Length: 386
Image 1 (cartoon, rainbow, N blue to C red):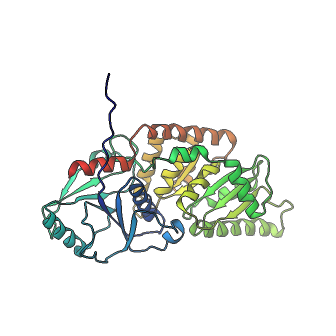
Image 2: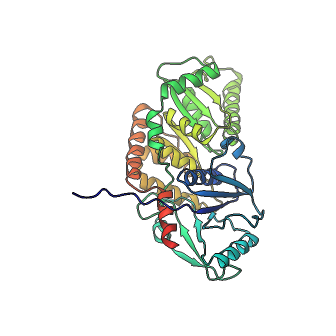
Image 3: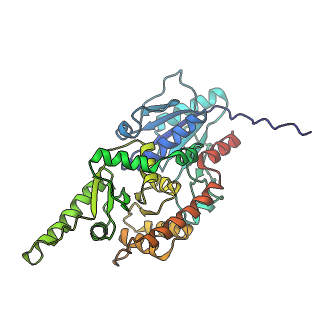
């Protein structure tokens, strides 16, 4: 008779995550999910951040086990020494903080594991560069090693964030109840066959095309618009459409072109509520890194508005993602037009198109389910370096 294996508990470490906010949603969104996931797995976390404004609505109640510290502040002498340092997305930890960590390390006789957490990408270099060392040459931490940790979509990368209870929460989610509650809150009457689309974007060049297509579609569309840049872009684009239609040839249209398109301008919401928004929709138009991963886990048709870079480096990054996704031609064309890479027309969002896109995303999600999530890999990696 074989004795049952007893799981070996993971030791509790002190994690210090450093984040400088770029657009208030992407970087802090990833870092907050990472911090909370660590805390929920029994770890102690200090999150150092230069702009906490997004946390007021993203995480109004905080998270047990996560302490938020102002960027550049100094730890008191009695604070727990650092076991793991995480520099998120190329931010540079202040020299004063490094000096404190170096002093703590000399006293306790153990250096922290120093992680440089990079941006998510499907490009080939990620597999080559993941887990490579970078010796520190100067300063109080000279002789230490930074380790590059690259999130990615294949087993040879650092993976993507996925909480242990994510699949359970999603399975229990009631789409019909969510939609009914949302419509009750807006005063919009439920419509049979209505298509629900979430919109979280920058200023996509083809936004006016999408609005016009939905307005003239055979089935009604409920467009759920996130606050900030997405809401401003929709208002601007729709005003342009109405002006063009109303004043072309000096005549107003006989048909109300907005009859098939309803707008819901959303309030800022928590990360768990944003997940539910993605689960409830038939198509998710997302932007940045955190929302792309959450849209993948949602398993619904998705379109990614990638963060634009002045040298167009984002084009290669987008193509690499679509290659990994094995996106059908219509989804590739939509991405190209949506991101301003092509001046063609958007593909029509009919049922067959969305069904093909959804099948594609669910196949990719099934592949991700077979791989270790980012935090599981990060925990194992850090424990192996101590």
